[in-house]
Amino acid sequence: MRFVNPIPFVRDISISKAFYGEKLGLAIKQDFGDFVLFETGFAIHEGKSLETTVWGQPSVGSGAYGRQNVLLYFEHDPLDALFARIAGHVILIHPIETQPWGQRVFRFYDPDGHAIEIGEPLDQLSSE
Image (cartoon, rainbow, N blue to C red; front, side, top):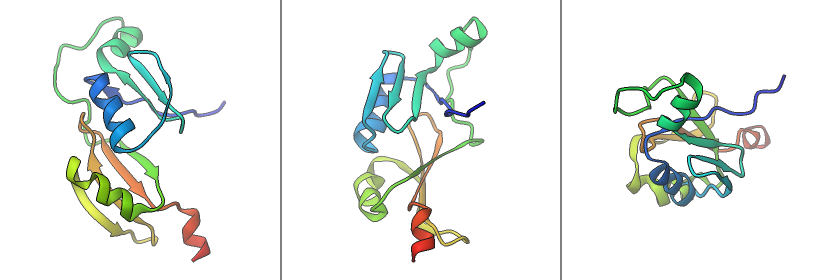
């Protein structure tokens, strides 16, 4: 068995596709309308459609899908340049901070309230 990736549910696929594509710079590999796969392997799915596929019906609620119980993790180099480019366009959890293990990261919310962490590549830590 091989784990592939989590697929966050999103309220509005066009807003989330623009967020991940334009703000974070992820290139789209395949766009199926209500499901978008990025070249990194990360994917998003329009929530009501996926709820119907998985459970046979969409949920009744209309709140954000993000529940502060999952952190979507990405790595990027150079971190400072990415932070400067997107910090003014997101709700920050915190700016760049050095973690106890030495990695620099920043965290913020996507349009659905999913927590996102972007850090320096971990393989850079061992070479410094």
